[in-house]
Image 1: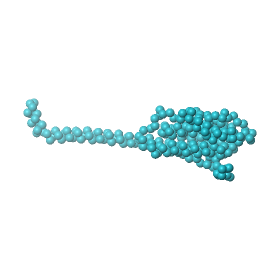
Image 2: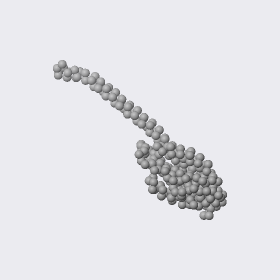
Image 3: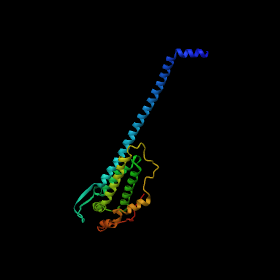
Image 4: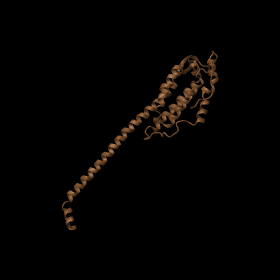
Length: 229
């Protein structure tokens, strides 16, 4: 076929050729648009599920903070003029241990979905309670309310810091399209943890706490040390 013949063929069939090219181009464009749309919908559905789990995990941490803050009136007044109160979780040894082994540790199981800062603070709270159990393992259940009255401020401080870190997620990180890196270390440096534990009412007033049951014939085997993991 000569060059002139080709030119004549194209001139006579140009409308059909352009129509065919347009149809092919439209089909390719439509296919590409559909693929990107499906991928976007898939990504959005996946992110919705991840976001739901992240929200649920942080809400659970806030619930833990509220548990720590809930107080039980003991009746009467303290020397400073405040109403005598104790953390409700320390109503008895059984109530505390049931909560700690259940709701608290369950919150820790969602750590994959928590921000690094919340995970670290949650682990510090766990270190505090491990220290509590280590030093007061011989304390009788009927003394828990009096112990709670002494260390009430610890529960308030732990609650406030845990809640603050959890709320930072809702204020700053909730719509970040990424999870916190699992390679980030999940605890504060040991030296910082031990320093912070030593500054708690639990450790500063441990001698006073031990006297609560020693005076009534209890025996103490405390090592007077933070029991960090």
